[in-house]
Image 1: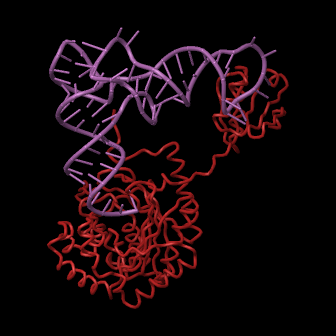
Image 2: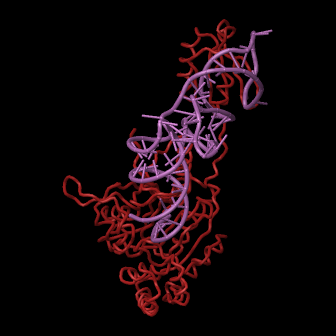
Length: 403
RNA sequence: GUGGGAUUAGCUCAGUUGGUUAGAGCAUUGGUUUGUGGUGCCGAGGGUCACGGGUUCGAGCCCCGCAUCCCACCCCA
């Protein structure tokens, strides 16, 4: 027997119901916010992710499905969605068109990691990206959209918030932080020593307790923001408060992708094990430029569909359509015809075997049909059909032409 | 990539110190004397005990390897 690859799952039956329910819900809400669907390829040039996600990130450093194709191109299965959307945005020259462009997408992402609950090698994300709007109101709108989606799905969450500063204040802060960490270099872990060179900000969310103890007195990012960043962060908090969205400031929230600036946020759930992040996003005003576009402010987020699926509260399934059966085998051909006609407008389940009424009712119930329609010897004689409403238990016999 | 646990029917799980033919519930399926379900009763089918080796008179059980899942680290959605 050939099995699926490690960390790659089939989605069917109940999982598929949840999956599509999520996609439909999220899509509906994104459209209400004025976003448009975009689909980008699963395979992209490796350089795209190296330049956008960043070589210092774990994603690019060790988790990419990277290979050389038959044309000797260095290509990669996408590990995340933003890079491809930005590439498309620049390629279609929308950066030069001006105005605001808002997109949403969903699809498979690939990361070569050790799988566990809520972490797969092929997983699915739903994400949105907004280009051309520098206002922090757009950041708040993103957060509200995530909040709306989670609320509609019945999912509880905590929202973590931070600001990463911009070109003005981040470099100064980074220098200060590096200075601080150099002072306690003897006590920190190997990873943090490496981070000092590659991406010093990332020491802040080091999980090592010893490191965290040493960093307690480290300079805090949000205390070193320039006035623009600081004002925007204040405005963001105000907007969230006014819209009744609870948040907690997490000065160590750095996020794993290099392209974020200013607003960074993460939605976490306490009910799905250690992989607790269910959505994450933020502002990335410099990424379009990095990818050879005209400088364009941008902000976005992504949600992990598999992690969300465990938390979704599904609406009650309602009885739907018809179950059609016969009690005499001579009637089978006729009910096949009837079902064909009825399927133009309704979901129809049909049984090809003649059975007694009790068995048909059982089967109709199992099929979750709203009506059970049966033709027996009486009905055959009188050209009518017996129909029972399985919800309210009313029944009637009607002429075939009225069915 | 490193460490730990698990793997028995379609699903959830029992299975004694190694000892005949490996069990249960749910699901599937058949029947249940006259045409009424979701909730009665009686039956049936379904297992290479993950896979590959080894020890033993004898292995679901012990040993080694391997695959997958789960947990932790790492990281993230």
